[in-house]
Length: 310
Length: 284
Image (cartoon, rainbow over all chains, first blue to last red):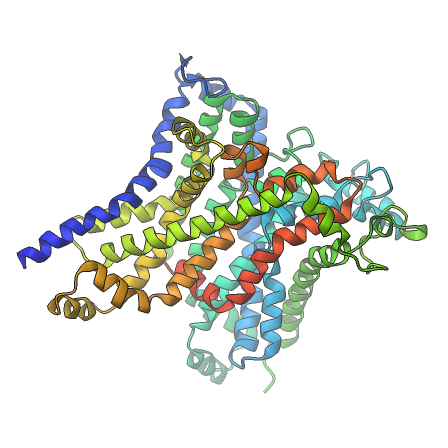
């Protein structure tokens, strides 16, 4: 048995490449950002380090765009958890409980159609909707504008939303909500698939005994399906929180660098634009630290709350 | 037997299905219809002056695709994207499978800590690592190189990959490995002759998921692949928005070219994806 332990110890060496990669690219940045955020570094020029202590953090808390980005991130998280996940759950419930046991061909088709945005690259989703909402180019209207004008909805939309034009992505009032809606829509399919597989694992006998007890459809949904998939729901909430904090390409490409007037920034895009576009590396690191602290603490809090419920 | 709340229940369900189906339909329909249009057709006339986005093409044509691939860096970007995705898949499969197998079945006293360390990295938001990733890549003189992007991107997905493989290998029976040991099989023999044939499903799952995750990646391209020849498709799509303002059909053709490999992969692999997502979701 001695040889076996020796061999196992030797084998552990082969886990080193993975451990090194993960340490260097995922754990080291935490400390690196903590370090950089204490300096005023411009344009990744690490020869010129100016120690500024915590003044980057002080500046951050007085930065109105940062608060705007934080507000947007919080709204995005809320939208994901309270709109996207329930929709995904309802759809999954239909697919699993009203089709799944019978294996209908319709279910397969429906699943594929509902799943389409997930199997398209995010840049394509962002850009299709950007083209859809974009303003008139040299030859005429954008698609959304065209619909609004041709069906006489222009006035109604403007009155309803209080904007100047129907170019919703160009209006400070509505731009972020367009992003929010597109982002919520884009990730429904992903959560739908997770929920569906979870609901399919619930034994049919439980539903049958509920039928015998005369439970209605809503009762079955809230008293059986939801409690029995609570583990998965919890996981998707954590995934959603982490996902929102690293949400970058959707916002960046849909709004063309988080315009108009920096109102659609989320934390990730704000970090990128500070660190890589304005070349304020130190300040960018400060935002990166905030992303890390917020994302990790939020998912820890979520986990703690859930444990209490259980 | 008529169940309580039946009507309201089905009404709400149907409403959501129709809403989501309709929203999903809009982008797909636009891409299919517009990618095969002539520019004059798209620019429309009469009622559709300026934007003939929703109608079928009057004449189906592939000219937009031809135009797209003749654009300066489109073909190169397509190849770059394939190289990036495929290399990431290969690296992650090899590294993930070996690491996870050792951690799951060849345990020593500190293995639990290693597992926690590796898998907990999933919780780190990738965006916050970008400044350091840029620093490291520049330090290695790997900016604008394949290896720079491939290794950085692989590292981001490594915790997830190890997690998927680990939970699968943990479920393999211990007796299997004991038997192999009694027969005197070495680790490579066990890995290639015993474990690999049993891991086809998990290998396919991981490969497909990683391909799908890396195909549309954008941030790594922005940070590491900055020279135009090294751009990947997501960057090309972003940069073409303004350039193709008057040639929207070409832009839609670009969407189609970008989406098709990913959709084909997903279509081919429906089963594996749902199995993999579930095992990813049921962690605790």
